[in-house]
Length: 387
Image (cartoon, rainbow, N blue to C red; front, side, top):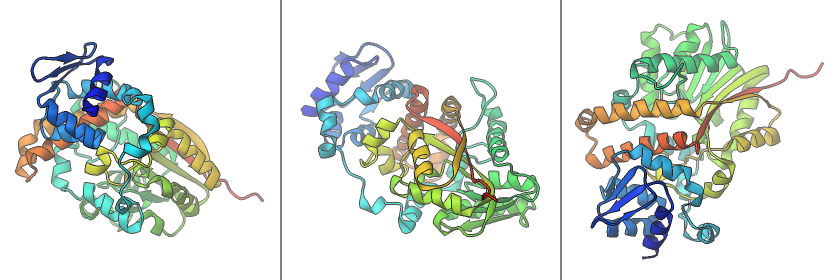
């Protein structure tokens, strides 16, 4: 009953049209949300908060013809959905992060495996031929599927240019993905050591390296970033800091500093969220952490720069944001995933999983379309020691 009252209070003031079973309508008008089972919906929200909201969608208790549009409205008003008195009591009602999901060396392996070891075939169904699972950089909008691979190469090349990767560069990559950046760096003449915690990704990346004839230039290791050794001219890490966890951000950036040679450059790509929302959410358990990225936490741009400043001697030489490009990237992935739902099912993923992933991709896209989320490319530099 309390959840129903809070939800109704919030929905009445939003630019949405919320239709409950029985015909009652709430909201100021906008994208439609149909709540098919109000009692079950409110029970889940009352029990699990925003986790319950996502679980209710997975269970088919509510639907939205324009899911991204509806979630974009909610993301844009995220800070005001819960009344201020309840916000102040967040520590009492919000679920806490499970201790088992801390990103210790063992915990990080389990967390990464949960998502990235699902199935290489699954990711191949909705990613482009480069198998790149991060924000692309487009030349214009709206983007078309046929241009996605080129946009991913544009993103990769920009990062490699920031890190000044070229002939003979000793490059450390933290977070291999399926190997496209390592391949592209090796084609420039770099010698690449790439680290991953995903066995599935490592196996496919190694196969792609062999097929490209670049085995003498690329090494892919199943290794935690904290276990890296050696000295490198450049480091590139794409959307990996999101899996580090706030308590280990200082360790992550100190590792970059320790592995960089004097005069070295590190190029990072990171998804960010507003600093105040990060502080409010950093200790609570969210739907996306429970079902998609266990142990994950998006930093704020302020948190990145503060951690670098307070825990390392590195300098933030440049930061560029391009969140609208991520929204387009996610739209293309989501549409591709939806179009190939039968093939997803043929891989053994049931209807609840497909709704979960549809919600995840739409939820993420909405975050960028609303401006709640952003994505940054950073250049960090390590100065040569003084004479």
